Length: 249
Image (cartoon, rainbow, N blue to C red; front, side, top):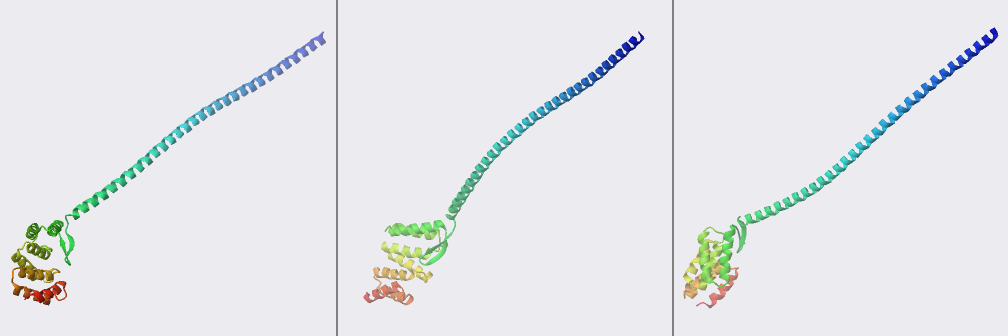
């Protein structure tokens, strides 16, 4: 009986030990499971954060891409504006150049300019040059009365003109054509006296002699022709004068 109780007690103790051991192993397992669960949840949380970060990163990259596209569009627009501005500036510069040239040309129409007439160079006003040429054109058209008036008005308007000697010569020719010989003689003589070196001076003397012949003043005509030959022996007018002298009596 005593042995039986002892055995029974031993059995109970063994079972109690085994139960305690099993209970210990269950606690470890639970701890492991809890640990694994915590690690799993932490991993999930990390994964979620990583996913959220990736989504945020993708959104940021998309925003940056959109901003870059907007900048490229703005840059292209600015380039287009710069090209247009460059074209506009070039056009303005061209217009300024054209306007400047136009202004210069218009100013030149009013500025004195060097002219050359009958071997003489001098400075004349544009209007002065135009009026002289108009009077000369009138004479060449055979409108002698109008030419006489034009040259007389011209010399009154421009008393110091460089065209004076030439104007006297052509005025005398217009008056000769109108048979106004005495006035023609006065103008031819004025030219020769005032400007003996002028290119028209020999012709003026020859024309003066012609006027004297028309007035039947042969003696005066011969003297004028003699003076012409002596003063301008190499001129064409002198050759004509020699021929005239041989025919005058």
